Amino acid sequence: MKNLILFFLINSIVFIIFGYIGLEINVFIVTILIILIPITLNSTLLFLMKQHISLSLIFIISCIITVCYYFYSLYIMNLPGYKKYIENSSFKNGDFQIDVQFDMTSYSQLITNFSLYFITLFIVKVLLINRRSKHA
Image: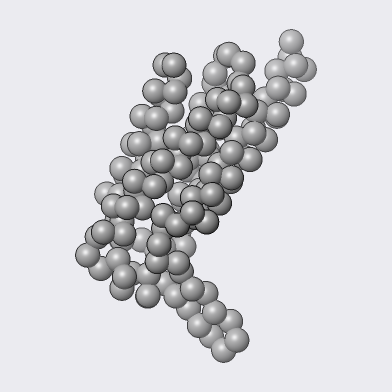
């Protein structure tokens, strides 16, 4: 239980910092950071844990990250200038076009983020099991 509180606090702090940054950095950089930083921090915490890492723990951690992302998204989407921020991030050059989705809280966004977090943490779990079994 203490570990879950730690995971929740760390992820909350990370997304509060993202919220504080707000619309100041490029949407593509924010997207990469929203994926990499929580995965890196949570993987490090899993690595430091001495106890068995269950699949249900990974599921719960992925849910925690996704919930933090959801509240961050609600905050960002309600900032003044959000629509202009997204419009400025869209790109078109001849036949090549990149459109940024306005709704950061759509089911597809949440499911994609959850899946990415879960799969990555599961891979970390498998690697940790292999590493710990070799050293045992």
